[in-house]
Amino acid sequence: MPQISERAVEMPQSPIRKLAPLANAAKERGVKVYHLNIGQPDLETPKEGLDVLRNIDRHILEYSPSQGFKSYREKLVGYYAKYNINLTADDIIITSGGSEAVLFSFMSCLNPGDEIIVPEPAYANYMAFAISAGAKIRTIATTMEEGFCLPKVEKFEELINERTRAILICNPNNPTGYLYTRREMNQIRDLVKKYDLYLFSDEVYREFIYTGSPYISACHLEGIENNVVLIDSVSKRYSECGIRIGALITKNAEVRKAVMKFCQARLSPPLIGQLVAEASIDASEDYMRDIYDEYVERRKCLIDGLNRIPGVYSPIPMGAFYTMARIPVDDAEKFCAWCLSEFNYEGETVMMAPAAGFYTTPGAGRDEVRIAYVLKKEDLSRALFVLQKALEAYPGRTV
Image: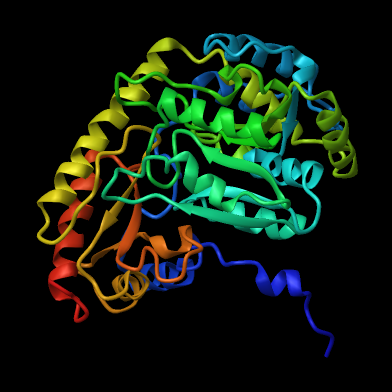
């Protein structure tokens, strides 16, 4: 029998989705599963986007331009201007989700064997995209005890060698909810400039910042304009995960030309998705404010509830809608699987993402989980209660 590729062997399973068969089996047994494992908001998509979807008046669903509709890119220029990110439509390439933007960034900027420095814990699919491009992720540790703040310059420089090609950040961060400070962003800028690196910056959660601290985009950093590749998506902003619309943004014309080759090879980004995303830019201020306020309340509900459970600790996330929590178990992956396969409380259980999948350092995150606060407060409160009951019953509890 022919063998699968080494690349396929190296490709990690998603820590977010690999427990899905156990969750499906639990549901088939009649168990209600509270999904705290994935960043799929339960809030409604903007009416403006849904109205366009309901009223599409086309006789042919044709290819769109490989770089995306110009009308949408021009409208995005106005959206980014609100965040003091000054672009032209030509700086923006529409992609099939933020995931494709990351993959095309790596494919266009990195050679096989090149290295990317990434603070960990990190979004697990970054590793998968790096493997797809033949590149290597080198992680630099952040800790829950320090709130997942960025390590000092010296720690970065210990990793930099002749193969280092880029730094990748997610700001606000998935999975930690951390928001990088101006000082930290300037530190990254100085490293990028000193070693002439690319800076890949995933900023899909910019709408969701819960502190008085400012949002500092990689596009705000002076002197490295041609080094920056910004990754974006409408999935979380408008609760539109399923339309698969993202963006790759850079001032670097050579990078854009390279990216366009991959865009042309995959022909075009989703037609209907672009129509919905373009209309959603007109979502009312009330819509965006209500969503923001809802996440603020959910964050408080979740973090207060987690830290009241004996043996559990979670720092307060400053952005996005995730938190990392330390739980008193021998192995969080085993615990998450046990919750789905062997436990229920009054016919209910919880599904979380084992944090080890967000680390590359062996053993890291063994007693941690990532939790997404994407459920309404009533469901979050109930899920926390069920989680406490699960921890009390789990045979591998450590405290």
